[in-house]
Image 1 (cartoon, rainbow over the protein chains, first blue to last red):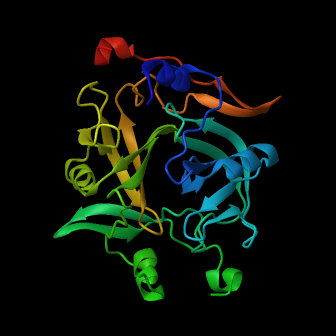
Image 2 (cartoon, rainbow over the protein chains, first blue to last red):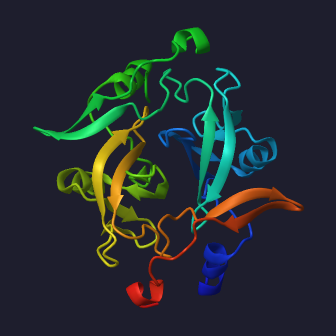
Length: 142
Length: 142
């Protein structure tokens, strides 16, 4: 059980104590150092966090592939980490990155290439900043 | 089971089809419309998404309190949503907001008020942009 003292340490302390979820992961938000745009949201396990901090390049943990993953290892679209920050309860990190090319596996600069708008019959999406910088077929062969 | 056709619909389609996790949640990143700063990372369930889209103010679902929550309902620190975007696999949303006061329950503008740096004996935190805009004791009475 957590206590108020624990919470105070986690929120106000300077010890790096990531709070991993039941799957051993924290959430990571990557933003573009130049534009502030959110490029992607992904997850890091303990090893991905350590490798990111040590190398200065973003490593993630893929839930779908159940594997550690260096961003750009297949696509070449690496992320150089300029700054990493931890949130209040230490279950999310924010990295400001220099993104080579496109962050999204669909070839877009950002994974967030569709806006959500209220429409008749409910919410709808529309493309925004959705130009592809590469063709996924060329990069991933599928 | 998902198929390639399903994935293509989710990634390239314009239907709003949020992919909720086992707890019925998607991740939400809120950034400041002016500065691009990441203010907070939280979660939305179906109802929080609908209320956010309909009202133009951010609603979340608190995992710790297991309750729907209008951002600012206790603190007054509301978030007006200027734009909402959905990511490629529709399990994360990004909202650009006008934040009244502070986003963080600790009184800081952003929840990300500590930088992570590599140090002797491992990673360490240091305060960055950590001034409090309000005293949580005054606002939450604890």
